[in-house]
Length: 245
Image (cartoon, rainbow, N blue to C red; front, side, top):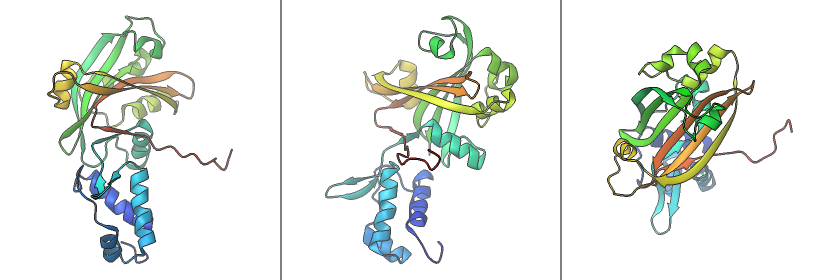
């Protein structure tokens, strides 16, 4: 820790412990008093650090118990893009991706209009399960139009590319620009239950349909992410006006 430890340093310390799985969902966070003693800071500094973690969705306060690490979390695309920009990787510490299926399918009524193709048009799919510290977090199925596969043939192989959208955008020579994420709930299919380790008869899952557009207006990916009801889908969006506004 820096000699003059600030709240951001403390938040970063515990954020890393949570991301690395050293602090697991349901674990109790140290008390504010313990944080003050460990880092030699005032309670206002420790409290601000804990508030930062809470606002990021990493912790939650439980009356009569204290501050706990939040349940399994699945980050949204913005966090993934920022992670790839800073590390060159699409997965964070403790995360792993296992490919379940790679192939060509006919675009159904969910995918076709978002890729702007006729129903039944052949599109490429990459289906995988993402786990954090060995625990399945979500199943993601990414669909790509023919012009993406033409410049990114690696996506047709059952191996991780470490950032499929980024690779496709680079090959197309056009940057990613906009994402629309649509959230709903439904019952899990049997393959989804198996991949996520869900055992109940009828299991409600959260579905996020993600449509990513390039700066030239073309869609580079439509993805369907499925997570169990206990998994927190996390968005963090600044609301303060930008300086350029």
